[in-house]
Length: 162
Image 1 (cartoon, rainbow, N blue to C red):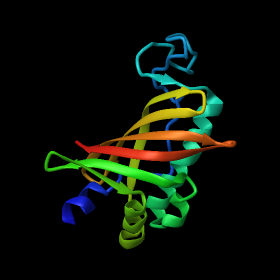
Image 2 (cartoon, one colour):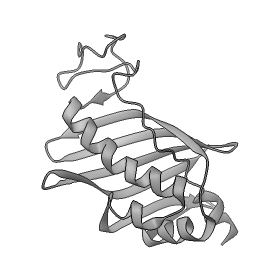
Image 3 (cartoon, one colour):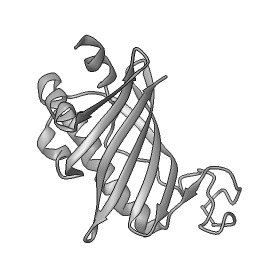
């Protein structure tokens, strides 16, 4: 249980850096999207401003829940049957997202930060990777999202403790 709790220390914050916050961006054709200060090809951020805003909204619920220690907030960003996966002792572990909700409610508010590293959208599905920090712990978190009406919902979260 201790190792699950350690892995569940999800690095989170209320703020998500957007593509145009200086990240390298590419458009859906592979290059050239004007991202403010950077027009370089590189990171695979291939989502429109509207798509990114919707994805950030879902991630915002996820992060706000951690910062406030309140799982009811996170539930707004996740699909009801969402899952969370990670490895422990070289074995795949997949749990219902309720494990994350329980962690939020048991441990209370957290200080954390992250930024979107990759974002790729294909119609009504998206893959997003964030690089995050929780205390001294650093993580790579990956999310699969699906559009539900006008809203994006997280259907799976996988993470790697760096």
